[in-house]
Amino acid sequence: MTEPTILQQIVAQKHREIAANSKLTSFAELEQALMERKDDHRPFAQALHRQIEKKQSAIIAEIKKASPSKGLIREDFDPADIARDYASNGATCLSVLTDQNYFQGCNEYLQQARAACELPVIRKDFMVDSYQIAESKVLGADCILLIVAALDKAQLLDLASYANEIAIDILVEVHDQSELDIALELDVKLIGINNRNLHTFETTLATTLQLAKTVPADKLIITESGIHDASDVQLMLDNGIFGFLIGETFMRAPSPGQKLRELTSTIV
Image (cartoon, rainbow, N blue to C red; front, side, top):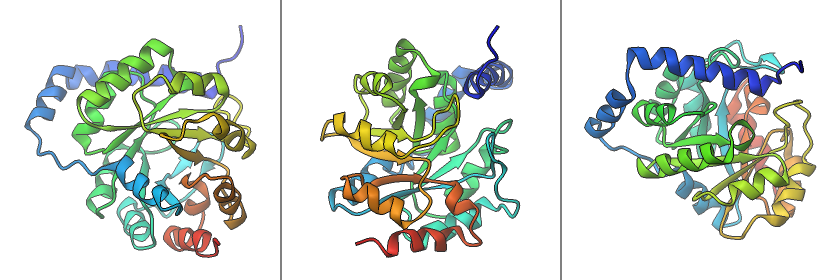
């Protein structure tokens, strides 16, 4: 038998987590909590659109403690402080890793980061069930991530439909043309192109440059992974890509917010 990829292992773990969590809080209870909570949705896609429409870099700044490929990335880790740092240095939105087993994240990190600033926040996790989407909204997330490589087409359609139904924004992530073709069938505005192959973890910026050519003009492209310096940002801007999701580069800097400002201040 072929050894499961990291992505396949993560997906299997997510199903185990949902089974365990639903014994503590049922899906019906989550939906009841949705009906009772105050609606304080921050428009994630709209915030990105405002920047991209002006042909200015729109940065989704990520709060991430660790990753399966790099291990511990940031030992000095305070989500609220990092969120404030990002917000004061020009971030458009935040991304918060909540996966515990592989990224050393947790749901509280998202709540802490969102409470510390006014920026819209995406819950960066591996969505495989509507349970997680309802949970994300209850936690306060303004957007969720759907990864085409982790789901079949029917699952994607169902999850996107449910997310739209409960009014939480969607970033759908692709890595190749076949995944992009599927993503374009969904009712979503944001197309994330991951330069990292989630099965092999190999990274190349050519992935975004190639796939962007076939993305319709009414979609917003977000390039993800492999953005390390101002020249990488400039390369994307020169090719009409204005949306970025950047994590590790910021997380390894003494001040993530200052690194964000450095990355964008020299752009012409």
